[in-house]
Length: 428
Image (cartoon, rainbow, N blue to C red; front, side, top):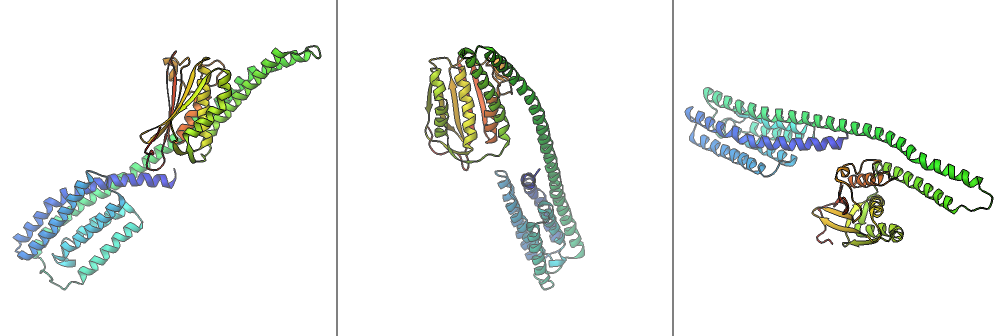
């Protein structure tokens, strides 16, 4: 699995853990803060010192509560988490300034946001930034005159406040570091699952291609035998005698082999990279209809197209090939005098090409097998046309859906996602 894929998974896990962590913080800090203030009051701390620390605690709890409420509406991103940790370091240093500077019993709480940054961002610019902010603020605390703005705590009071701060820091560290460690483990598990799926899919495709190659040889064996026999008959005929019926059958068998080979080669083509560019699906549909119009005319089948211009990003050659396969299937299922309609329209964030016929349709028990290589409801069909169309749709990030009712026709729909912000404002 590539590094970008891992980064995507890591960021997703980080957002989830950061969201849970920021929701948890006020639950820990809110009950500890009053206990610290109570310890100061019981230890005879000056009223202004208690008031100053109460203001800092109220700011901290208010900020944490705001973050927790915000996280209920949206997941926390990396940038927001970085800003939150920086703000937390600043607020802790303000609390330390009001409780003895570098001798403050609250100073160890600084480990919580700094270690959380290391666990979340690893060896990165974000983690270095947190450390830099922490170092600058600690140097500022060192620069404060001794006993300013308030005298040091008595030893007993400092011990009580330090115990509360240690408990709060350990709980926050446990929540953040364990959560992030679990997130990295889950990312590894997800990557391992994706790797196994990719290997299984690759092995399955190799097995399928081996089976298809054998079936292809079988599909070509019969027409080759017919061609050989007809050629021998023609060769044994008196010189100059024309064999129009035999030549017609010979030509038909050669065309059958050609179509089978084209289907097989097209089936392997979706593995190649797409050549994406702007494509007007309405114009693409017109081109595909023009390519089969002569055959439709011979079969006395009417072709119509509805819908206005609908631009998307895609590979026009592949999309035309997929549409031609669906149109060919519709034409072969239609009787003389029937009509095939191609509709181009948008639905939400997807563009849709629909091919509708009023042909013989497909039995319900057979419909689930449509799209399986070498399964076809048409005598002599390979079934690869639908496989190719589905592969092209999926390669574009879309899907192919087929609905059919015996005796009433078939509806095949290719749905393709729009690039960028979504669908254009108006569609046919």
